[in-house]
Length: 314
Image (cartoon, rainbow, N blue to C red; front, side, top):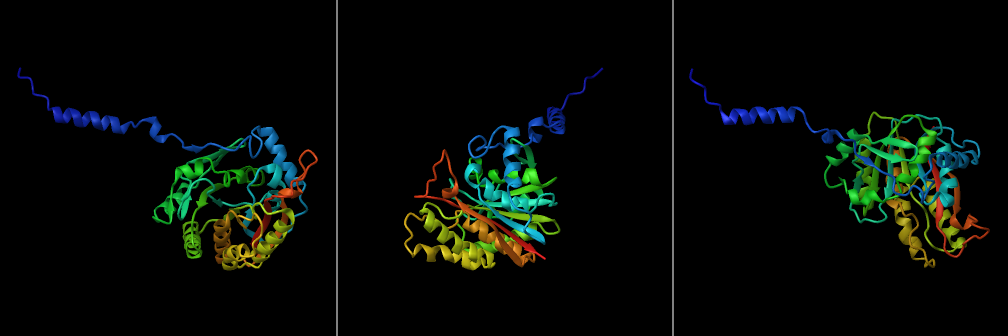
């Protein structure tokens, strides 16, 4: 009997086909952005965090908005300073339903141009995981230079993370699109807002701008600067909000380094909600770090401002 010669290329092909038919489980491993400021900006213990957030919300006044909320501004400092102000924003959407929450915040540690989209499967907090809407994320990343994924900008950034426990306590099922804003012109903000609306069309979305207000003036000047900024926000004029910082700097307010650390996030959200039909805005609450007493002391020489704002339509 004549033995047939084996074809080495056929054997290699069959072997390779078997391998790719059963890919490594690691290819399907879930990618999760783990919390970086739990135990620092907010409690790491789950029960303590639940009580903290729920108490903040319970301490707010009754619901102030009669209409469909399309966007919010919420601060992102340590909860001991800004948590109560943030609660005023999230109190307004308690029990409501949104398919997706698009959160825009500043990149504090890493310089980026345009916007960086968090391309993970989920974000994790002590309260559990929040899914990332990969369909929208991929649609944004396909747009090229306006959107990219700069992982290093997200890893230690707190501006998005600090919003999540509040959202987890007031909403049911939802997913998120986490976006960090970098150096962007007014025109860039307008373009980015338009792309966001196109990517999220036919979805019930909520926009959240994560931003603190004035940084480091004294208590009296912080109140003056922040009330000026809030009045422009309440007027619904994103261009005026964007340009106001340069005008305020000209006044020479001692130690003032910014009017809104999330200026571009706020302006982009204002533009987006306006195009969604948002025709009303309301200041829900204002405070600054000088209002907080720690061990009986209030530091009012250098403070940071916090504002809660809702954008809605009737």
